[in-house]
Length: 308
Image (cartoon, rainbow, N blue to C red):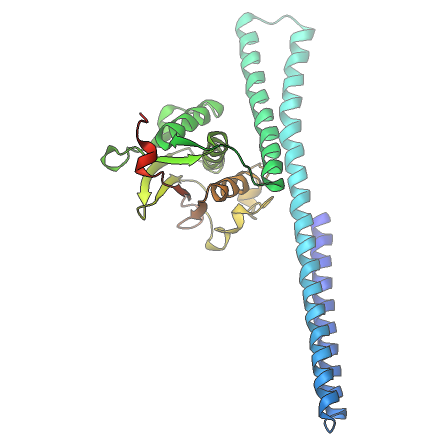
């Protein structure tokens, strides 16, 4: 119902803007015709009417953008509510079961395992929201250290495998060309958040089976490029940039079944840009998988000296 009302509001403001612009153009033409002999008045009228038309157009664009932004924020709140409520309800259910009746030790340990998994999911959602707030408020000024990207990516793969209970072969990290060690300067905590979000996103959007390939390479001599390729639902070309917007969820029935907050890739892009890099997406098309590329400045050879 809310979506229908918002679409109606967008259509109303666009129609109203078009009618106002049309009315102003008509008045402008009438003004010119009536004052064609007085050049100064005609020119002044054209300028004033042009300013009014521009104001109406800008106001309409602003209103439509605000409506769409509010829609994304509402979707985000609904998604976060679900992501918080589901694990809490699950944990509560298992605790009530343990409290009300005796449970065999094997089943008890299984309950504990599930509750810990739900707790990790809950913590991950909270950390994601907090991190988005931190990045949105200020540019993080912290001492940056030299980071071995192979080690960081391997650690993130291990965390993702454990979090989603996946076999080791589900996510692979290809050896770097020539066995070169690749480094970047940055905040390890933030870069770990970015890589884990990319991997989580690839897992989440691979409903038919997780087959993720990661690779690290030097790009254009001065960049470290991490590519994460999945075989999941894929993307149409018009979504390559939009998926990095705050609260944005790709429309479509298949995408609607996959839960999320719309913050993961927003965090990835912002962390990459705060480190002087960027994040991009490519896909052959729907159903053909997606490649997310995280590009970061390559550390200079002199800064790597003495690092194992």
